[in-house]
Image (tube, rainbow, N blue to C red; front, side):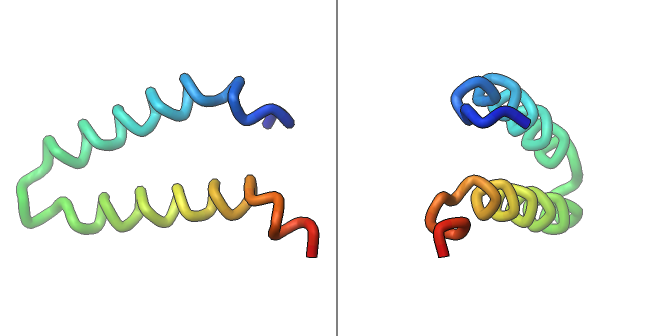
Length: 56
């Protein structure tokens, strides 16, 4: 992982699009788990990149 988050942005965007395409291709009743998993992963990424969490 790079210290510069902007260098990873295109890859993260592509991964997000792929994940959303996968979730949206599922039956409506099967999507909630995918969205939950995606949200958990995004939350973890944000927490790792949050400078205020490492300052304290």
